[in-house]
Image (tube, rainbow, N blue to C red; front, side, top):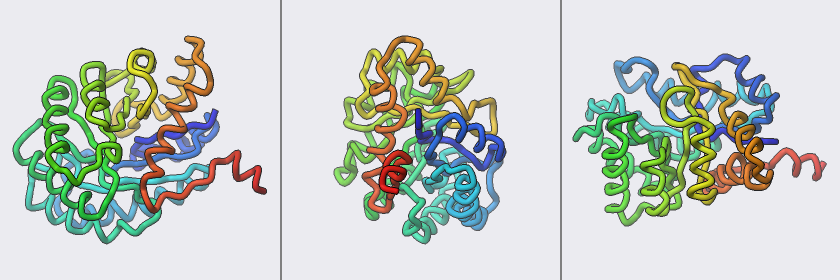
Length: 276
């Protein structure tokens, strides 16, 4: 089955991972801007990083038949430095005409601080002015429920933000309903230890349905699995779910969400072969 991984950090993965993902059926990924494992010393480091996302990684993925898309922002971990964050946000419009850019993300909260909220609102201002899609990072573990509520409140208070043009990522059992009820898309992150397992994600699909629901690996520098989405497919099949339902979650839904971006163009492999 062809699938899309809508959240994976390939700058932190080897080229061998691209090959393994392609062999498993991956046809497209989207890579949000995130923390480099250390705090960058100035805005020019982010400009180079944005070039890496829009140029180098896109070409590396194409060698394995995978379409590489990306999101741009300054991540929540580095948002405590508001002056730096504002310099980075000011340079993002330079890259918004690139066809590989889906929108602003992954923005959000890390420790739910005042500075993080300030930078989140600055990102929302840019997204509203430029009519960009938004990908939101919700905090980890104990900070998740409060942070998700804070994020949803800030989104709700800006009438320019259209709920269905926002994906709330890293949802879990205690936050998925909040995001869906607010009209947003949601992402379930399949981490081996934290966040969500394939079995828990399957449970949530069975409980909450598949509308506006996606799964991702969020593979990064840490202990993570770039083949987590195929693990979810295996879990769903083992429970006897129909192929159409599985495809909706791992392919059709990401495609529908991305298609709201005016720059987005993609011809699924089967259609391309048919036209040829």
